[in-house]
Length: 367
Ligand SMILES: *Cc1c(COP(=O)(O)O)cnc(C)c1O
Image (cartoon, rainbow, N blue to C red):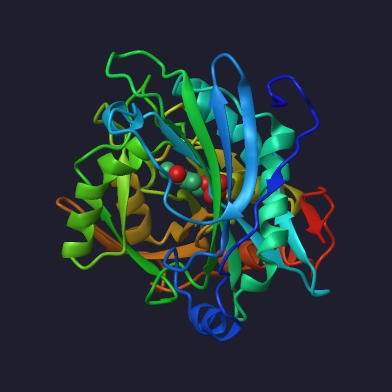
């Protein structure tokens, strides 16, 4: 068997699908897909073994993955993932947005979780081939996309505590509509007293464990009628970090914008990075700077702060309209989307969908 450990050329074997979803059933599923509930017919699976490296890459029917009950992911949570999208371009083709950045971040997460890196060519070939194989699952809805979920987990049956010697790299696809079910123009957020990531921890890695730890605070936010959680720094200084799965930007009345700096406890969002680049190209005064929760409230009340938005691949750019916490309660601007938020969102979406020039070379067209 050919191994891929040190090889740049990757053969992904095609396995036949015995029973692909019938056209009518598929069309019903993608007519109103929501987010993360509908899955396509195929998946990519690649195995890793310490001795062999990456091998046995297949594109085959999506289905359950057999797992030994002692597999270390089930005990010590060695798991990482990525979230990216294939977009429908203005010319009808499909495109990927900055997929190389997802591949690189995936490997940064792998290093932090003591997992093997996936060669960037393998990561992008897997994503590309799967999207092309299931292209007809693209949802025919406004703002629709094929959400791509690459992930890796430890499969070695071993209960000792050390990095596992066997892993699987898997890619699945989920036709997606709008992320927030309300489709509301602005979200309401709850300032949590739980924290998401401590200095020296795994906050900058996209690992399932971070999300597991955010579920209680997120549940609390939902129970109080909010859409998302805002996490503050773990040292208790009141610095705003990010939402459970999105980065934050603050817009002031003089046109300046700030976003919290990447200190190691914040996930380095690719949407965040893209918006920084776009705003700088527009000549906006945008800075990576710490911002405290009390200041946020004071500035919103005085009118110095005019807009706040959250950003990430799943929900793109989402205005934050209302903020509440045990010690805070305020509305931002009019409580709806602001001008700068809408302008940056439109610029980003236009590049992602190929309806504006792509000066940074961010989009790769698929066949
Ligand atoms: C994935 C993620 C983001 C957003 O990253 P994008 O690359 O923009 O999708 C922000 N915060 C957290 C915690 C995340 O997991």
